[in-house]
Length: 174
Image 1 (cartoon, rainbow, N blue to C red):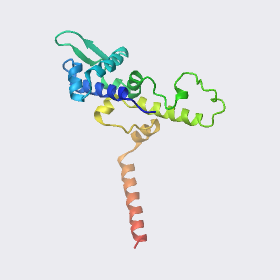
Image 2 (image 1 turned 90 degrees about the vertical axis):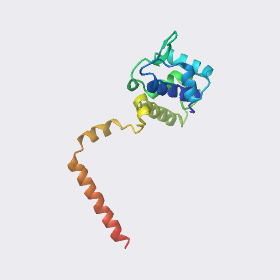
Image 3 (image 1 turned 180 degrees about the vertical axis):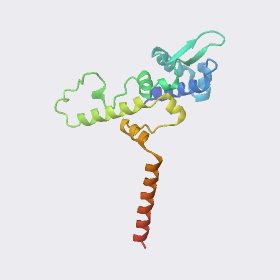
Image 4 (image 1 turned 90 degrees about the horizontal axis):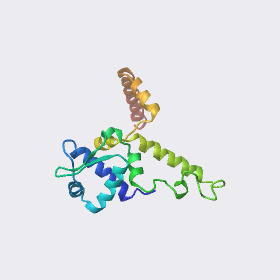
């Protein structure tokens, strides 16, 4: 799958609105200038985002767009899904029910299904706020619990263990 300009620009539009639309509405022209994207092309993208309920529009002299929700409430997956015609990794996964006549005997279909599920799961964990914060290392559910359990004592034991291994390697190479 290749994420098209629609998906990439939709994400950029929402990031721009998150950064610049906190205190005022933002016009398509302003976004287009900052992002160096055609305002005509942006109109179509913003229309999709508006239809999905991701942006609010206001008409008039001080009109423009702003986010409908807080950045942490948007997932990257939902943004891409709103902007793209399809976010399937392969054509046979585009429909709810696989239409491929080989789906029952295809040896690679389980791989594509697994990869699609992994992609979706990862993109559902990333939020617009994560993009703003440049935080892309989304821990697995079991890693979050493990991180909360770690204590300073555990950390210092790990450091001690690592330094011992380093000393051993240094002696072995002498």
